[in-house]
Length: 237
Image (tube, rainbow, N blue to C red; front, side):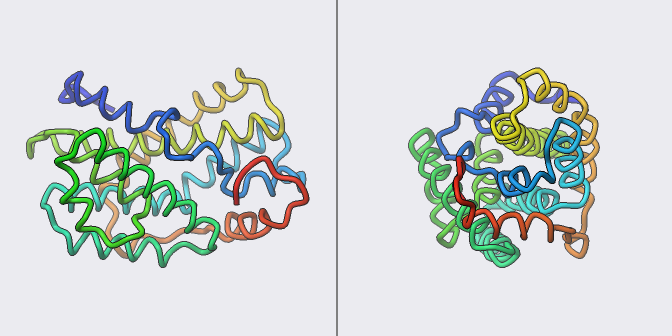
């Protein structure tokens, strides 16, 4: 992936937006991994890597990231109707209450932070129906923080998509490392292997039509629903 048209300030802003230190609470969710690990379905480095890889290929994160990209484009056009549409669409596409509440909580925290850092974005955020999904918030903030030209736009979209996916993967790895448990080196080895998947998906997602937004996510849905009934939990439902 080329980032030659991304200047240092734009890159630093995107890195901040995708940082695990961002105070949005993402670290407190396992997105079903805690259920799967407690059942022994995910139990080591290989099974964790396989789960994350399959989610990238056919899971809900693929659809969520495509919606984030649509929010990015709608933000460029200041198209509040499209932002509202995709925010409502994504809320309806969540298959469990737990995943929906996670997205809303993280989206609310991210929009609040963005207004604190760049007050000029408030009008664009206000145009979105509440509650705001995390993917929608990420897309419009990434667009607002990166000043682009039409020639640079595809490259910046791909870079933003890669950053969003990388953030999701590192969050999943953080949960797996704590719960299995695994060493930090094993987590980095998985992340290294998955770079190719992230790069390929970053190039594919801008080409997806609306009718291509589907996923095979029943395993995630079942794991998410089972999580709230676990006897002991480290992560939020």
